[in-house]
Amino acid sequence: CCFQPNDVIVGPDGSIYIAQGHNDTGGPQLIWKFNKDGKTLITKFGQFGHGRGEFDQPHALAFDSTSKLYVGDRNNNRVQIFDQSGKLLDIWYQFGRPSGLFIDKKDMLYSADSESQAVARNHGGWRNGIRIGSVKDGKVQYFIPPPVVPNPQMQPPIGVVVDGNGNLYAASDDQKDIKKYVRN
Image 1 (cartoon, rainbow, N blue to C red):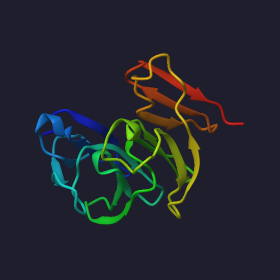
Image 2 (cartoon, helix red, strand yellow):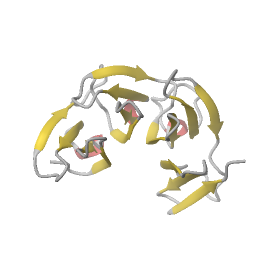
Image 3 (tube, rainbow, N blue to C red):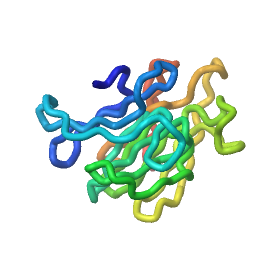
């Protein structure tokens, strides 16, 4: 299992989900689900592709308050939504090219888009940054552009989390740092 995993998350029941798939490694593009001790494979779902339920770099995982699994399908420029058994429920394209996902206790989805401006197969003019919106209606309500960095070739934030006070933390692997955005 899990050559070069991109993300891992613990489900509401304690099961462990792992996103696998950097397409440049030639490995599978799928989601693994293990029991809570990580020793027993419960299921796996997905395969490389661009169709419904297929992945091209599943790069981020998050759960909402109703236990739906959100998968940042980065090279397909979308978020795919599944139940815990791997049944596809919906696909959203409005949250950019997700490298990182986080859903807070109010069911707000934060999507870190670190690559839209760097690739040819993007949403046509979309910008890197963090898109924020409710999982209840799927509408993007806010956009945070990436900070200006000394080297324009450096990657914008690739990961995102929010603390209990609403402060946002954005991680960049190129800059090897975390930037804090304070909620006003």
